[in-house]
Each structure stands twice: as C-alpha cells, then as structure tokens.
Image: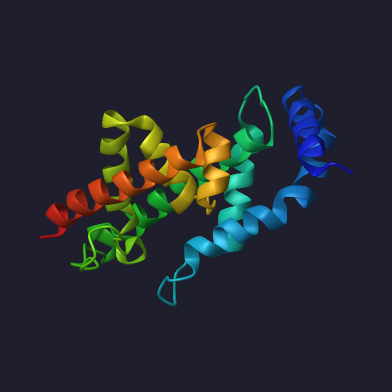
Length: 188
C-alpha cells in the first residue's frame, strides 16, 4: 500500500462528503500527527493543560471539517501545522489572560544569533513574529511554521514547499536570524 497515495485518495473522498473516508484517514495519519504534537511539547514545563493527544484531536477535527480541495498528503500536513499553531496560540492566550491569573513572563534568548531557543519563548510571541515575517516573506514564514509547528525536517519542508534544499537551508538561516532579532527586541 502506497501511504501517500492512500492519504491523498482518502482526503479527496472526505472532501467529497464520504463520511467513512475521514474515519479511515485518522488511523493512517494519527501517528504522524501525534509525533508532530509530541515534538511541540517536548520542552514544555510540566502541568501544561493541553496535551499532545488533545492537540492532535483538535487539529484533526479542524482539518476534516474544512471544505478544502485537498491536493495531497503534503498539503494536509501544511494545513495540520497551521491548525496546531492556531490551537496552541489560542490555548496560550486563554491561559495567559489576566482574569485567569496569567501574564507574560520574561524569557531569555540563546546567545547564538543563528539559533534562538524558540522552545523557551511564549507561543504568542512566536505567532506574532511569524505573522510579521509572513508580511515580509511568506515562504520563509511557512518554512518556519512547517519546521516549528509541523515538526518537519528541513528536507521535508523543502519538498513540501517545492523549493530546492539549498534554498530552504538559506531561507531557514535567514528566517532564524530575523526571528532572533525580532524576538530579542520584544523581550528586552
């Protein structure tokens, strides 16, 4: 069984309204989505009220409820990364509302400007910075989103975006440097 073709076929069937297609799709993509979600939670502090399994379920529900003309497996995981980003940002905003006793915490960035430690930053700040980056260079913002929120390797992200790996590598280097400068200013 060719997994990418099976996923694409099921996505098309689900988009056409076949109720069983979405049920067949979940077991096939669940492990990959679960691995993506787990990578997002790897460096989180204990006590997070949103767990990887809940993130996968919420993201999956968002994905199958959308009227998208699915072009294939890559598009599915691009949309999954966006859905996970949206859910994480909404969750973080809700958790940090003053009425719930939250608030912004000051965090420090890595001293290496080429490799900011994004795991220590509040997801709301990363989201806002990515939104600003998208206004300047949408491809770089999508690359960061696929790597950070989608858990894709540089090679997988390059393939998903349809760019050469050398282009993705350069975009990644530039986007990280831009994000480092942008987020450093936000936190100082």
